[in-house]
Image (cartoon, rainbow, N blue to C red):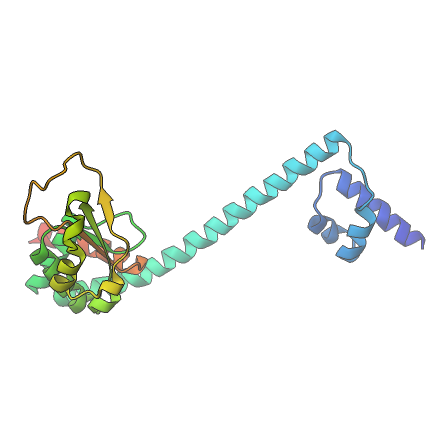
Length: 224
């Protein structure tokens, strides 16, 4: 009984010093339910509450830093494996014109910071070449690609989504909601304009591989 009283007093003391339930359980060999029961009527002074709050926030910050470090380490390991694969594929295809063309097109028109592989353009022929490249070197069919049209409101009645679906063979079901860009014009200035189409795979690995290939392309030409 005396031991139990001593443990309870120790739990209250540790709580008042700013420790969390988890930290108290590491120092006092009792169940968390006992700690919770002993502390439910434990009142803290304003200064004790301040110490506890700062200590809790500090633990949260440390936990986030540890979690971020773990995630970063995992990403670095994934990148090492991906880089090795990308290098092998680059050496295999570096004499293939389409391979180098696709990398160059993405370097010029593709997103470098988006979470996945994203390419945007208003030229249907360029989009055709990019999709051909994606099929041959990423192993992606048009059904694996998501699309979204960006266009001004005066063109809305033309249903340009159908035009792009026909040009690219991407199913209309893979198209996201069309984004209408702001404009002060009420009529078309470019009669043949069909908007900008954005295609994406949504996979970070595709983007990372493309970025590796872009760097390898630069080194390849520097060495020539």
